[in-house]
Image 1 (tube, helix red, strand yellow):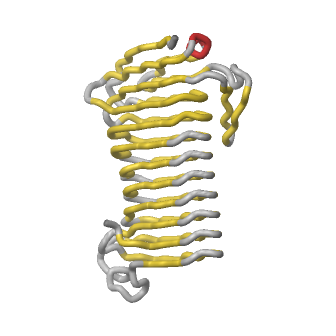
Image 2: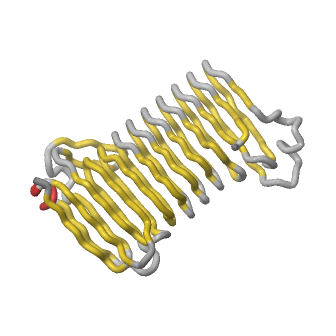
Image 3: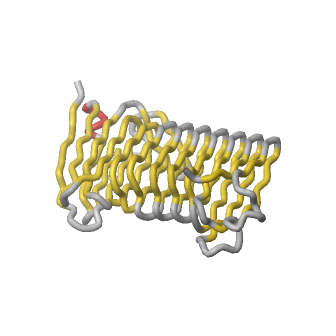
Length: 257
């Protein structure tokens, strides 16, 4: 039978949520108000090792210890034990910052965030809504699907797809064995590399475009007549510098819908 931890914290200004759990599910929604509400469900042993605490306007949910339950999964300088599942449900004020680190947990986010930082191995990320600032995504064996990022996006993906509806500023990313699709960009610098995966970049109407892209064992395509279209160079619109390279994958520049 599942047990639970349930707590509510007052976070009136600049709320931030940090979740570090090994395996399970994470569900985050932004809501009206100034309170952060946390519910953690799991077995008794897992909950005994789980800490929920407040540090100013930062709410932290984490599993204590690096290897509490045996198996260790590591991503970068991150390592967690596994052996039980936790379900974390959080309701945070609109405009909160969110930081997530897990070994194998699916994450769903809905609403409006200030910034987003996710590190995950073997877990999908779905973020519906908007990130007002920057987003940083690191995934291994998991897909990342996001709606709108009004700042910059940095990502690293292995064996998973990255799909973003819109990025307002810079994009810096690398993908191995996964496709990358940025449906709409407008200004700044986009630099994306992929091995064994396709890259698709959507460019908004009226953008001045500077492209340098290459592919090994893949096709290069553009819906925009580069260098000859008045919209692609010398106009009054924003400037987008696009740099890309694929190995065993196609590279495509398309019109943003």
